[in-house]
Image (cartoon, rainbow, N blue to C red; front, side, top):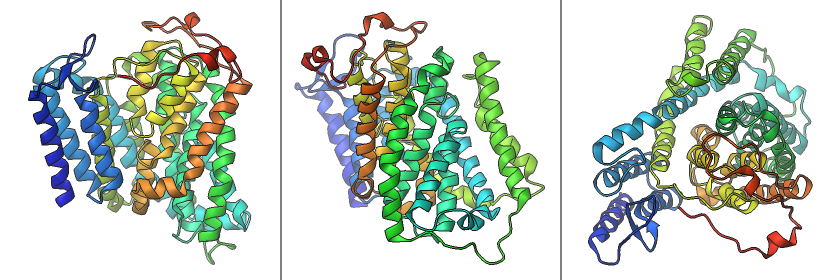
Length: 464
C-alpha cells in the first residue's frame, strides 16, 4: 500500500511542477506542458510503467489509477488529439472504443476458448506424438508460430499456454512463457490476418506481400528464442513422456474450438475485404467470437469461472492501452530502418496499435520491417503485447519484468539478430505510399546494413 501511495504522491508532485517556471511549452503541433522538452504525459506514463514493472503493487489497480490520473491531467492541462477538456475526452473515447471493445471481447473469449481446448484432452494426448526431450518444447513453439500466422496471436498464445500447462504438468518456466509469447508474435508478423497491427496496415492499403518479408526476421527470431527456451523448460520440468492413462479426445470440444476460430477468421476477412468502412464502427471481431461461444454453449458449457481472472487481466491491459492512446505522439523520427528498429523497443512498453497508426500516417516505411518491429518487439516485456498479457492471466508468476528479462533474455537477442538479418538479406525498401501519409515513399532511401552512407549519417532516438 505504501508503494501505491508513493505512486499517487509522485504523480501529484509532478502535476504541481506545472506551476513552476522551469516548465516550458512545446512549439508546433503539441501545445501541452513539457518538462525538459518531454511532454508531462510521457513522464506520468513512465511512472505508471515503473511501478508496474519494479514495485510489488497490485498491477491492475496501478494501471487503472494511472489511467485516471492521466485522463484528468489531459482534461485540465493538455489537449487530446481530438480537442480539449471533457469534450476532447469524449471525442477521444469515441475514436478508441472499438479497439478497446475488440480487445476486451477477444481476451475474455479466448480465455474460454483456451479452457475448451484444454478440456478437449488434446493436450493430454499430445505427448504420444511429441519428442520426449527438449525438442518437444521446441515443436510446441513452432506450432504456436504456425497457428498465429492465420489466427490472432492472443488465441495462439493461449492455446500454447494451455498445451504447456498439461504436457509440463503445470510447471512452466518463465523463459518458456516468454518463448510462447515471442512465437505467437513472430507468427503474426508476416500475415495480414495474424496480428492487429498488420491488419491495420492491410486496411490502410499495404498489400499482403509487403509484410510477408517480415517472416525472414520472424523465422530467425523464432529459432533463436525457441531453442534456449526449450532447453530452459526441459531443465525445469521435462515434457510428459506418455499420455495420461484413459485420456480420450472430446471431439465436440475440438469442434467448438474450431467453430470459434473460424468465426474469428471469417469476421476478420469479411471486415477487411468486403466491409472495410464498418471496421471502425463497432467491435465486430469480438462480437463474432462471442456469438460463436454462445451458439456452441448448449453442446458444451463454457467454463464461466475463468472470466473473473481474465477480466482483471483485461482491465489491466485496457488501462495501459488507454494511457498509450492519450500520449502526444504527433512527431516521429524520419522513416528509416533505424527508426523502425527503435519502434520495436518502444513497443515493448508502449502499445503498438497507436505506434502503427502513426507510422502509417507518416508513411515512408518498409512495411515488412515495421510489421516485424512493432509485432515481435512487444515480446521483450510481458505487458508489451496483448498475447503476453493474456498468457500472464494463466501464469501470474510471469508478471515480473525483472524475471521476464532475466529468463527471457533470448527474446531481446532474437529481436535484434532477426532485424539485422532482414536488413542484410532484404534491405530497406520503402513500401506503398498510403493515402494521407506525410512522407512520400520515394523520399526514403533504400539501404542495407553495410551501406556506409547510412552508417555515417547521424542517428536519432524516438521523439514525440
